[in-house]
Image 1 (cartoon, rainbow, N blue to C red):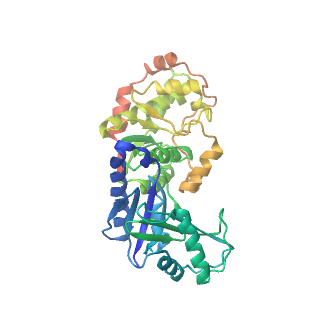
Image 2 (image 1 turned 90 degrees about the vertical axis):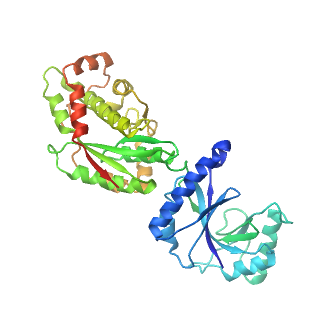
Image 3 (image 1 turned 135 degrees about the horizontal axis):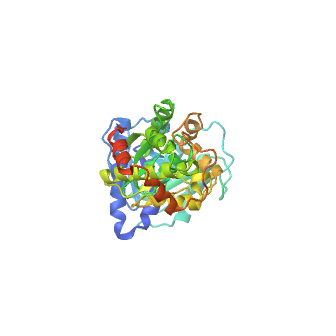
Length: 390
């Protein structure tokens, strides 16, 4: 019997006149991921609100799951076998391909989605297939809600496609459907999660990391590379800028005309300006940060207002209303937490004041910046950037 990967999309289906744009993006990226990971030439077809991919006879399902669950735009997916639309024949095919269970399920249910051209309703098909499977010897009671075994059948294209397990997809919008954004990523927990959330909304993320080397060691950069490598699995053509920022922090920290408590805000404003310059070079449409309101000194509403003042393009902050526990759970889910929790010195803690300003006044901040050659430092850091392609 022919085996297929069958995928359903979610929010993409609500796009009406723009639906084809998102579906084609999804098709192209799914094919790219499958071709690269399994050395094949897969054909991704779109039919009646579904994507189908014909699979080789022998596959490692777990490896396919690892790849497909990282494709944004997919609501759920399953590995199906192509069967008959004749219910009696289909029941026999389902029975012949019933998986071997390590522990026998306590109950079962049949769920059907029918094609409109068939002479029966979905509920009728579920009842008849259930009865036929009991006749075959299934020997399990039916449970309509929360059954331990769900036999899933979809009728379309003159076939009945059946499966025994459904997998959750990543959801969101098709990769690279919303243009480019530049993310300011550190080795911490928050910014990788913020990047992931914007990728999930269809943005292609270009990463920028501000490091303190040679004032810190290279551990921070190594951790960021690992984080970006994980996140690159959700998109294509990933680029990481490693930006030498320690020299900028030192220049600000040693300027006697600038109060120590305002340094953090000035550091952040410089980061924003540098990231904006890269965004303009990359033709990106905004910046992404991992800020959460009130979480640290630089993320009070007053300080964020003063920091955002340095940018002339939009700043996206998807974690702004998250608490730390929510962010940690998501970091664990996407696989970045174990790396982010490793100890290292990062550029954010370099030259940090003991008592940072909590309520910066934007006009005072602008006046302090008159003591700095802002444009010179922006140009210097971007010129000295190391660019890594993943």
